[in-house]
Each structure stands twice: as C-alpha cells, then as structure tokens.
Image (cartoon, rainbow, N blue to C red; front, side):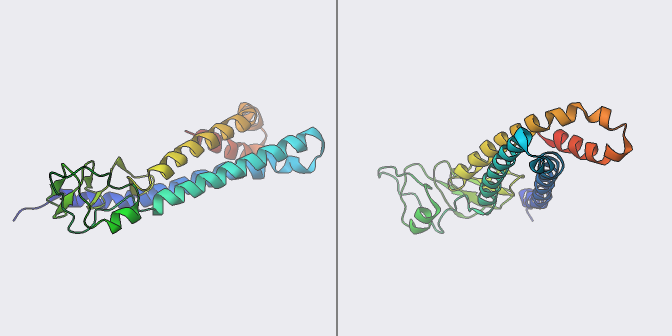
Amino acid sequence: MEINVFKFCSGLRVLGYVMILLVAAIVGVSYYAVVSLTYGPLLLRGGFDSFLSFIIVIIFHVLLVLLLWSYIRVVLKDPGSVPENWRAVPGEESLEVGTSLAAAEDGFERRSRGGGYCIHCQNGKPPRCHHCSICQRCVLKMDHHCVWVVNCVGACNYKFFLLFLLYTFLETTMVTIVLLPSFINFFGEAKNHSSAAKSAIIFLAFDSVP
C-alpha cells in the first residue's frame, strides 16, 4: 500500500492558526504601547505635543485599518482553484488562466496550450499552476504557501498579499520611529519601579517590530 507522505504536510495549517494569534498579539502590544501608553495621554495636554500626538494617532489608525483589511482579505480570499475536470486542448491559442476566481469557475471549458495533469487532484493543471501539499489542492499561479496567512498566495489574492506587506512595512516603520525616544529612555525609566511596567510594554512593542 503506497502512502502519500505529502498528506502529512496539511498538519502545518495548525501552525498557521498559531501565527494568526501571534500577529494579533503583536498588533495588540503595538497598539497599547503607541496609543494607550505613549501618545494617547498626550492628547489631553494641549499645545504642540497634543497636536503632534493627534497626527501620530490618526496615521497609526489609518495604517492599522489598511493592514488589517489586507491581512483579512489575503487570509479569507481563495487564491484560485482549478475548475473540476479541466483539460487543456492542444493546438489552440493560449489563454490567460486565473486572472480572477470568478473567471476560473466559469471556465470549465477553458483551453490553454501546454497544460499538465496533477496526479494528486486527478485533474488537469493549467500553466503556472502548482499543487500545494499543505492545502491539498492545485492553485492557479501559485507563488507559495504562507503560514502567516494560513493560505496559498496565488492568482486571486496576490494583490492583497502585496498590500499586506506594504502596509506592514509602513506600520512597523512608524512604530519604530515614534517609540524610539521611549526606547532610548527605557533603561533609565526601568530604575523607577512605578514606571517599570510601562517601560516593559514599550520595550516589548519595539522589539516585536521586524
């Protein structure tokens, strides 16, 4: 009896759900450090410090909303599935496959030159389509399986994945810049027991930024 060892790779999806919790924890710590501890209290002081804090908090929330929106989209969006019983018809002009999930689902008669066959799915495999051993299916224009999003990155969610990387870079860069003064003063403030907890939160948020 032949055993397909690649089926055990599907267990890695459990690790992905842990990574989602880790992302939520990093976001939560960063939010608490930037808004609740550092710049939120400055909003009530008035003057230039209050105005600067207001701008920082607004930009932080805008980037955070965009980051979470793109992350949820790349997690929930189907990367692109091959229609059942898809078969390539040789000798006809090549067509682009997988530009959208709706187009793929409507394309049961989709024709393309150079298509292959997936022995795992027992189905035709369009060009640039690969079988994911974790998701146990073929994905259109598969780039890779990302454990951070518990999903494959393919034709239909690649845009959201790139947006997630962009907003993550902008958000983490901002967090690094705005927490840098507090991080520099971390060791001095840690000597004061009354501010040790606050300093520890800021240090943790600063250290969690990639």
